[in-house]
Amino acid sequence: MLFKLYPPQAIHELGQRGNQEDTIFPAAGSATEAQRLFIVCDGMGGHEHGEVASTTVAQAMGDYIARNHHDNEPFTDQLLHDALAHAYDLLDARDTGGERKMGTTLTLLCLHRGGVTAAHIGDSRIYHLRPATGEIRYISRDHSLVMNLYQAGEITRIEMHTSPQKNVITRAITPGSDNRVQPDIVHIADVLPGDYFYLCSDGMLEQMDDNELLRLLADNATDAEKRDALVSATARNHDNHSAYLIRVASVEREEGDDTLPDDEATTRVNALNIYRQREQEDAAGVTVLSSTPPPHQSKPRNAYPPQRSLSSDRSQHRNKALFTLAVLAILAALAFACYHFWPISNEEPTTADTAIILVPVPEQSTPDTGTQPTKSVQSTQSAQSDQTAQSDQSAQSDQSAQSDQSAHPAPPAPPAKQGSSASENERMKKKIEEAVKKRKDNHDMNGPGKDGKEREAGKPANVDPAKNTPEPRDQSNKPETKDA
Picture: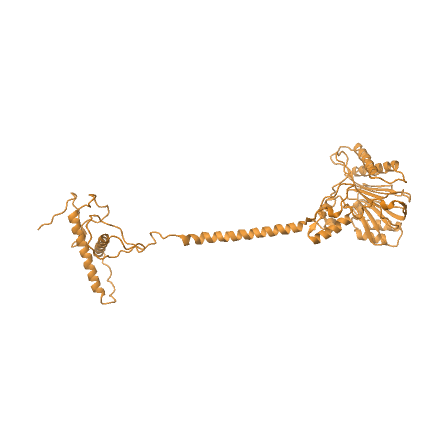
């Protein structure tokens, strides 16, 4: 494959910086139609340091390739790596060992018998444009933090240009490194007359996007006029901005050119492929892998398994969090209800909640056991207690009530509603008096209980119905004898 070129157009502007840290090879104004190797480097590291790094790398690689490459031979990747290693050696020799390391980006384009080789490190770019059909064929993938964030689905293309981290690069040529950074390399064989190759530092893109660049190059103007238009469009840029604009005049095909390597359309270091795949993956709910294959190794797009996008993962995490909160709220409500209502439903009645009612029980003849039952009848218990104990308790209650009435007369009872109430009261009174009398007689006859023990403390002693007051007991535990 034999190329003919129009005179290359060089741009090397200072911008609003105090020093020029960009370097182009060949130097501005020295490139001719016979030139086949072009290099643009953007230095960094402060005053003079960035300039030293960019100049060293650009000049070292240009000179090394010019000495070791012949025009009638293909340009090999191995020659590129050898030239870069030579540049690293010279940069290491010029390292001052300061705290602030110098470094530079790299863009390299070589047109040769085997096609076109494009290589880059950092965020300086290489474009392949075809204005005749309105196509941008290739944009080198920036080695920058914002590109990684975009490829991972964290930011959009618009946010890439407005992010405060847009100047952070992830690859650069720096001295004193054991792990020397290598470039991404692309081989291009699909080249037509009228195609443009555009190498530029990131300063050229401050005020211009890709579509604007394509429109400018598609204008019906000479290459020199297009170069001047690029300079005018970037006149207010803050950073140094440098570029090479190369236009292909003709391409002569040779036997065997059909077998030349051409990975421009499929390589993952082509930013256009990343943009298209990102759009497709966003529509499908997945995103591309953030990593890129190692240099000189390209894989088909279907070799990388799809991954879910971060927005889809965030949505799933949010749904899980909401579901967890809902479950916790339901459990809290159940716990609250059980705490307030379950103890009430299961609470057993206490002694204080049970009504104690003393009811008179008809007198029955029972064998005298000498014991004195003292339990009362409760409304919640069975009525099958000892009849004698009930009679004794009823008598005691009535005697206590009579003594209280003598000391504190009760208000008159309301008149009976029925005529039979008076006779029933009389009968009840007689039964109580008989029960009291019987109990007194039993006590006088038996004295202490059959078990020989004194009565419990607090129990009433013998009661005289006439006096309605307790009588003292004989301490000798002998039954009393009445006078005849």
